[in-house]
Image (cartoon, rainbow, N blue to C red):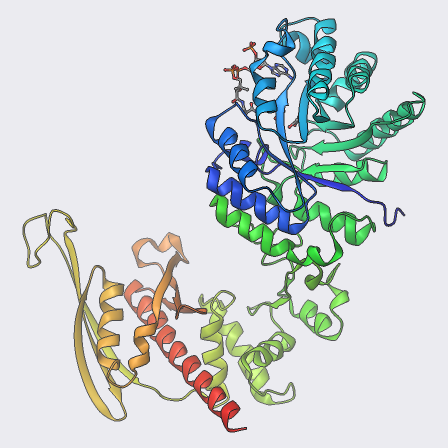
Length: 554
Ligand SMILES: CC(=O)SCCNC(=O)CCNC(=O)[C@H](O)C(C)(C)COP(=O)(O)OP(=O)(O)OC[C@H]1O[C@@H](n2cnc3c(N)ncnc32)[C@H](O)[C@@H]1OP(=O)(O)O
Ligand SMILES: CC(=O)C(=O)O
């Protein structure tokens, strides 16, 4: 097994990643991502194709003012156009204007592309490659040569494909990156072709042998496997993108590739202490590009180390290696235990511990709680995403759920009127024509309270009415606000009479918690979830205050 061999990770999130449908980056986004990748210790960052669009040009110009700390920023471009003198080629001129040390130049390896895409002849393509690399070298640039469609080209016409690499080598390319541009290769093909190219290179008897790299796409879901395979065969530059963003089905996902190479195969990719920033980097980039993170992504996803089945949790609690291929900390992720109808006592125990509650496996309450959880989930509740409701359930079972208020009922009145009519004044700036009024009846410390409040919709009206009734007793309520509200119909065949599950998320600006409500009446389900959300927030706040007091006294 290879060990401690240095690999050079080459990130192309800002260029090939930006070719993903639905992803668009501003100059500021690109700069932020580049700086984050620099912090992660990525040695090569492809910043874009200068001249292809104004943003990429501006990005390189701004980086000249404030260079990265350690990474080489690389400009990307194509070979010169057919029959165009190299010094007159606008693409190459723009790449030079980016003033990077390194330029990645892509050229055609597949004869089909030469005749069909470029509409030129095979010799002219060899000249385009040679001239372009040589010109960049003459201007003082170091060149990474991306052999586009290398594998398809080699399998179709190996003699010609090899001639394209020879042209790049003769002109002074330092890296030859073999690209599976269409993403359709399988690992055994990568092994055969990379091994053959590697052996061929050694027969050239060159003083400075160019090094091999790999660039894979994910059309056959093989991008990571193919890149790992190439590394095993001796490729030392590994190209990919954060979260696997890229044209069509994406590029090799560096968030999987790097830990596979570093933790499993012992290659040096990132400085050892930087690997633990991988999860944070993945989430940061998904935030900047405004795409929801993939919770089930290997290594860095929220669920990558989430254990749900009771059998799994029981074993993981005894020894995490039983159901984890690496330690979550190694990549900056964390282990999570999920509560659901797939749970066993071990899940309940783990949750009790995380809630700071004393509960023994042998205590009959534990088994009752588990049965209750399974019954409620069978009715349609879902606690997996609503741990605050489960904590309240557990506290109740243990007699540790203080009675903060009693609910005696609520009423909601909704009205929808055409603009300019009805009981509410709507302004042209806010032409909404619906309006809701909620009344709640509750008791606090034996005092009966009846309060009403308005809202844009029934849930807001209920939330407002509850707060109005409770604020005198619990002024800290004003710190909580609703951050998410999700509704799911459980038995859609029942139409509008279907059972509804509502999840609401609250925040106090520091933490978030989610509660669940269930009823055929969407307002009742929402009410349950909102009431529990407020109750949980109060409980948390009070236990934090208590913990601080104890800490001060001791
Ligand atoms: C495998 C990859 O991912 S390569 C990177 C792909 N990324 C992109 O294409 C994103 C950026 N691209 C662009 O902004 C534009 O396509 C530009 C600026 C590069 C070119 O735009 P246009 O001049 O309008 O040409 P258009 O996009 O229609 O066609 C591409 C041209 O590049 C030529 N071309 C393609 N590959 C190469 C190459 N390796 N070397 C030289 N020319 C090439 C094509 O033959 C075609 O030329 P033609 O129109 O003279 O026949
Ligand atoms: C160069 C490149 O992006 C590719 O061949 O896929």
